[in-house]
Image (spheres, rainbow, N blue to C red):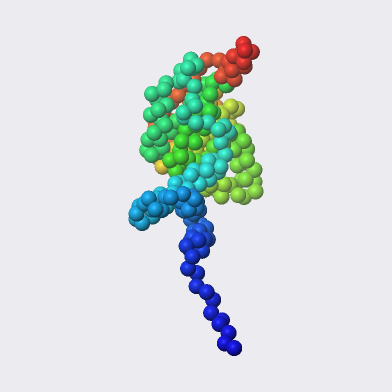
Length: 262
């Protein structure tokens, strides 16, 4: 008796679709696979020409990768707040100009490797504004790094002792936007001054930095401590800087008062 050892060819449309989905996932075309899976549940392929259907799949893959990149950049930035440009409070009287914020939100200053200083007393929203601009930068594809300045400088001092300082500074340098939050909340010590200078020098006229501080920039010279290093740091950041000067009561205090009235 003759035995037929031939495997039956895959001819069914369902089997072909399963193979296509499997290949898309193996090739990590997850956005395309999701769109293709959705199309199988409806009538999308029948209502489109072949080239239009392919364009739709490619567009979905592009969107998927863009959103994944934004999520990755945002996670790596390690922002203090989930803050967004659209949620900024302009109603509270604190010296915040909507037109200026909207201009800054275009991130033209990042494209031009310029800097931004956000100053004001505690609770006026400096960190929130910085994080909101940082999130916007991530949405535009800019590699961003947020850090509480005193903690960062403390960690970098430890890295210097361990011999890993240069590696840590390289990581910071690769970011197109650096946010130094609460800088000069205490005066710099002798070990922190040269580290901050190196960070600023690496970014000078190449990449942007946002600095938030309770002190106006006119006081920063004294907060650095060493006149020579102060001159070097300020000369590299002042001349290409935009400034937001906030005032008024703490936003947290105002919010607490508002809640008490309900």
